[in-house]
Length: 219
Image (cartoon, rainbow, N blue to C red; front, side):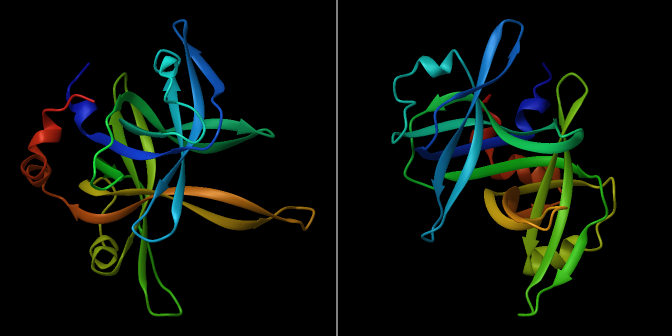
């Protein structure tokens, strides 16, 4: 596997297991399961983040509801069919279980390409926001399509970015509830996942210089 495909999408999250593993799919005889982690922010809020983990790692006794675990992996997307409609799903694909550290429990670092025109807006409270979709290359000619959101100075920087431009992004994965009205008029609560950007650059060398220890960490 090309090493770049491992270094351009890196995630570390640490949180509490809040759901039982549910079988997702099988690849070459290896089963993969989905479960959820509750990951704290600096505020009182917690992000509920889905993870996908191999049955080989599920043998670890620490993966039980109520326990805190830390994982390294990649943030991935895939299409799933619901009622004859394709829906973009997002999950942290776990490569390894690690010891929790005392620092930030939610870190993501990406190198990707802008694949849609950015959407810039200003809230009624005069807060500048920009939504962005990044395509991050993966092995075997696959790509992950990851929604990002930025505020303030980062939002202003991104609003004029061109489709196809290569960006380096660091931030955290966040979950967000929203209301959606169905065709029958009923409102349902949905959950969206996105990357909250805290640093962005178009200079790939910055990513390499800022993260020498992660460049050497083959996750």
